[in-house]
Image (cartoon, rainbow, N blue to C red; front, side, top):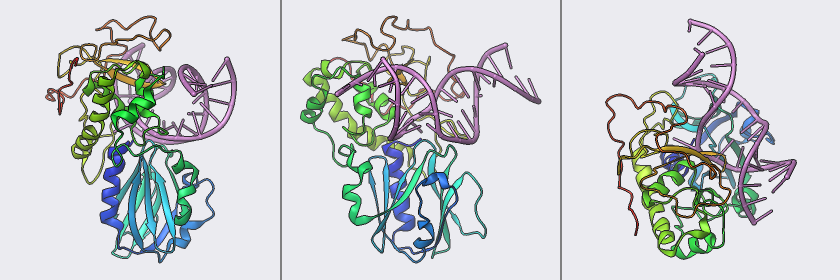
Length: 313
DNA sequence: CTTATCCCCTGCCGGC
DNA sequence: TGCCGGCAGGGGATAA
């Protein structure tokens, strides 16, 4: 369930695994991966991998011969590397690349939301999906001025704005949650109600958070939360009912823009309650937890809070 | 322009 | 133990 940091880790892994290698054989094992496939997988044999890039949550694998593999991991997609072995890998593997160095790179995707397609590299500039994306949140950090313009006059919850891929490319639910926590901003705060100081703080918090998340999760194999062996490295995400690492208040879970949202009532007070925001009519009393959160594993003390959220101004 | 809701899929977890 | 409902970090379509 990757966001920008996880996709960036994928890009780095794929760069190491693929660049300079030649594809010996490729196979699309799940038609759902590319519903419009024209059978391009067979044509990948003999192509060399030139370069791997990332744009927001999209991965771009540039091949010789003027083609680019475009991948989106969506919720459970993941690239893995194995030694070559004869025969086709079983689900949840959906795509396989056998390389000239005897390795095999697989695309695994339990929920099958991921997408993979092959496009002419020269036409990527006009690709509708890529064209929709706002500037990459890491490679092209948004300035306070720009964020101020995006937020001005908007009554959308600030969290929804952060997650809007047309405005900022790459931030997802966790990123938005953790960044707002670091800034001491309530997720439901109407974007247009933020002062210049808050906007600047928010813009400035995005790249450091992304850098931290990349470092915190840089492993050969990413294990997404919810999977066996996963470890929650985040400060408040999915920590409903547990004490805030900064102030001790119980973390609260609500829903914003249809997505689970965690926040700290102590560090992220709501300053400008919207008239009809989700749950606005009855602010959740602190302590009344919706459903007892998954208890943190015993022996896992305070979540590693890379930086305490700054209060006030 | 918004927002909310449902959908796409599968697996896991807690509760009963 | 087994079943059932809720939930999951993606995005898109559709309805208000």
